[in-house]
Amino acid sequence: MVNLLLLKIGSEPGLEEIPNLIRGLNREISVFGVLTTPNQTNHFDHVISSSYDAMFGAHDELLSEGLYVRPELYKVISAAEGRIIRMYDRLIMSDMAMFAAPRYPVPRFHDSTEYRMQLFLRHAAFWDHMLRLHKIDAVVAQNYGHIGYDAVLFEVVTALEIPYMFFHDFPPFRGSLQMYESVGGIVSNQFSRTVIEYAQENYPFLPDSPDRRKQMMRQIGLLSEVNALIPSKSKDTKVVRLKMLLSKPGIARNVMKSVRRRWNNSQSKKDEKRALSDLPLPEKFLFCELQSQPNGTTALKGWMFPDQRESLALIARHLPNDWKLVVKESDRQWTRMYPRRKNFWSHISCLPKVHLVSSNYDTTILLRKCSGLVETSYSNLALSAIQQGLPVIVLGLTHIGELIGVNTVVSEEQAAEVVPQVCAQNGQRSNCDLISESLTRFLDEKRGATLEGTLGYIPKFSGEIAEREFCTRTSVNVSSVIVAWLSLALPHKFQS
Image 1: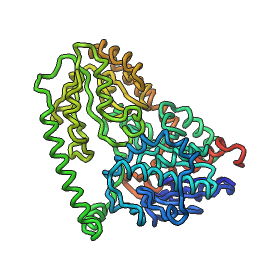
Image 2 (image 1 turned 60 degrees about the vertical axis):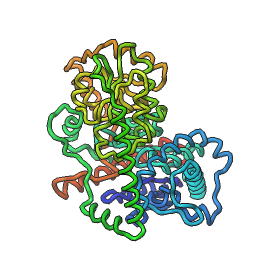
Image 3 (image 1 turned 90 degrees about the vertical axis):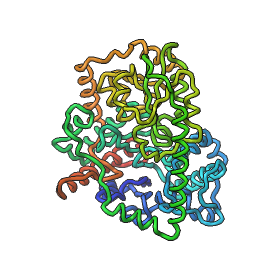
Image 4 (image 1 turned 180 degrees about the horizontal axis):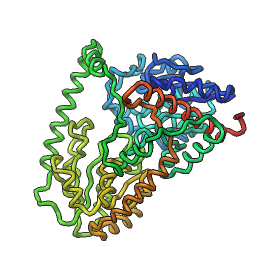
């Protein structure tokens, strides 16, 4: 018997059949699940938890069973503790009313180093207990661990030497799922391609939709048509949020949180305005539009660059003497949803060779005038730069490293080599034909290493038939890929 844990897979409306399909492929598999919300329709043999309970470690077992982190476990996972405590920044952005609060005497969330440390221990103790209690043999996740509790789960699973695989619906090819066994694997297609090919040879597998390649060409900019594959929005989102806002336990907390965020943002904008350079745009410069922080990109893919300030300081240090690094706030931050810390902009402007411009400065103009772009892992802006033939310095782990003009940096040694090289090109752009060839090759390689589908949302479709076909294709192929991976990862236990 193989005990499989699915993290937020098989409970999304339209994809609930995945556990049944997995068991249909092999009756020796028992499927355990972690839901998004506790009352979701599901076909799991056993539900272990949900995001609703796990976000702040609201597990009754922690008290009733007296759970604790075993010293031999902590010895292994402590190396990731600092990174995950920093990742808990994402909790500050969470609406507390949307998640369960821990039972007394565990305190409600209040942001402090002590609370984050205790949350890390609660997460680790719970997952260690559940994985060993249910004798879990393998774990498959909807995405890489980037929220907090899911990142701790990965560390515990790794410490227990349990096979782990996750899907990633990665940009720019939304609606394409790639598989990895670790975040470090995102730099390669080999693992995902191997599992897909094995699934196609041994299990039921539905072909891509006829226009998938055309859709991917739109997404990467090889066709000018508007991308039609977008996440669907729940029709009652506004109603749900209004009810939550007006609920007795949530209204005071939400109003105070909104007031506090607006106040902090106003102070941040004042700090940014004071820190802006009063000099004209430099003649020679690289450009960096900051990533919002915290997010999945900076928390995990760019983890070796723990803060945007550190990234800027590294690049600026290795610029030639007559060059500058022009920095601006991300256009995605127009609502300032992700707050910057106190004096963030003044801290940035103090860096030698950094030239801070207003968030209102037109990014397209800066992209046209600069000699290279600096980015963490990936962004749509990085893709735009590549399409224009502009050199791109990518900090951290990335899936676009093979594209023309991309220069990856994961160490100071690489920064010392790459930054001067990009500056030496002095804004020289790649040939249009070479750009097109590179993007096309990248597209075809990714198509062969991905499944057509999504797991965290269902895209909008023009009719019910198209949506049903999409859900069926996703469910069948995801189930086959999971069972194929199990047979490869657990050959001693798995019987196909």
